[in-house]
Amino acid sequence: MTATSRTFEDLVAEAEAASVDGWDFSWFEGRATEQRPSWGYARAMGERLARASAALDIQTGGGEVLDSAPKLPPLTAATEGWPPNVAKATALLHPRGAVVVASPEDAPLPFADAAFDLVTSRHPVRTYWDEIARVLRPGGTYFSQQIGPASVFELVEYFLGPQPDDSKNARHPDRARAAAEAAGLDVVDLRAERLRVEFYDIGAVVHFLRKVIWMVPGFTVDPYRPTLRALHEQIEAKGPFVAHSTRFLIEARKPEA
Image 1 (cartoon, rainbow, N blue to C red):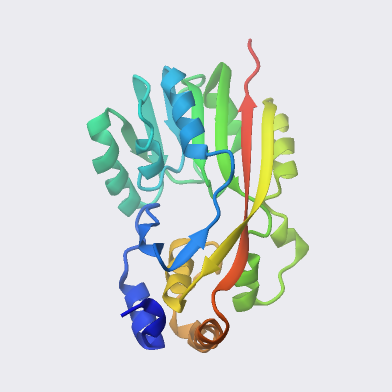
Image 2 (spheres, helix red, strand yellow):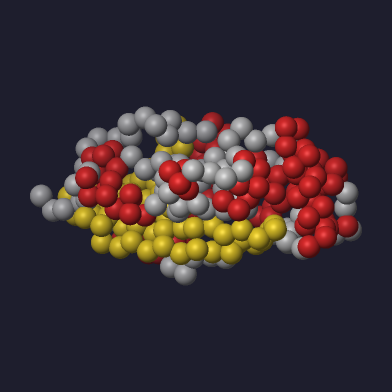
């Protein structure tokens, strides 16, 4: 039985029961698609890790992206703030010699000044530029793929209604450039793309909103059940719900002493 031939209640119940630990998105296979940025972050990150001697991955999630690198530096550390992800990342990365440190996202990085020649982060909730600049060695690099402005806001506004411009532009790449430069870093690359996203059934929507918790803050099914049912009926009648994600790539370098 395909997802689209199942009832609203079955699809929602399945999505509510699914684990949302880590950053493994294989659950969405056949149920949602997202166009990928042209720059290939994981590949480019892996190339930089292979040349580094000491690297830090911030907000590593379950460690899946860092683990995708073919070669890790002799000294590799990762931070993560959510306990289930800390355990998952530890199990995945310790066999490769990487240390996972439980650290709240809004706390100072628990490392000495100038400890790393490479700092990476894929989709950080927030970037603490002063801390990144502090732990980078002179000549070191921060390399990150980030969520851009108004990402998947077609879905956000379906549930929350029209959002203010400040909310839509909170993750604008121009703001990231200004913050990096204010922290004393030189931005050497900054690229942005708008990418098509399709949700093929309401279960995919529920799983997405449970996993990407900042989209509809505090999301649970019960308060939104009428809205979810209406969206289910729309998908059944008209086909996939289409939204657009935005991503930007930023690379910033700490000047030589």
